[in-house]
Image (cartoon, rainbow, N blue to C red; front, side, top):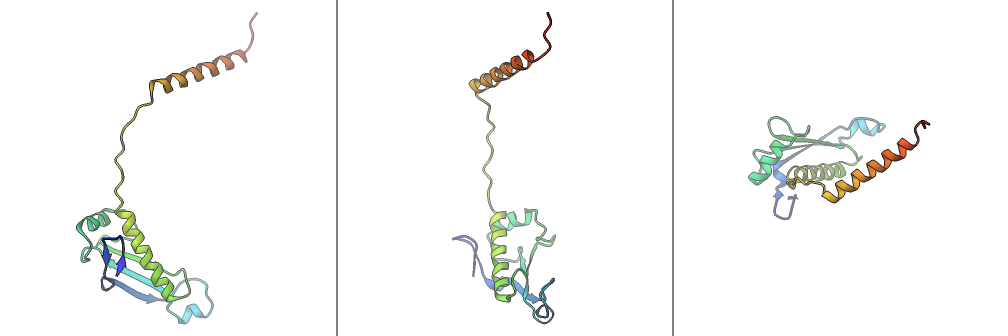
Length: 137
């Protein structure tokens, strides 16, 4: 079970993990060992609550395809186990990030006193600059 929150968990049989060969530098090891991990998670056919599914499908992220499949490629580590754990952690973070409900913004106005202070400082600054100008006799 992949724990997302205290109340939401994903069974590991819903997550498809494939071992692939990693890209980039790594010497001879990179050519013969499949240490990178390709994680695929189908949002629509998962056991997530409807709220989480809707938020994930509406979330704008390049790792979510048009078909509603999350694809994560983990190849940070040289070990396949560490890459698998990293991919699962990134999946949990993505789901948590997508389901955060933003607090609604309340419009506010500056107080009358703060407006007065602002205007006073502007007129004071204006007087200082005018005194720097050319003096006419």
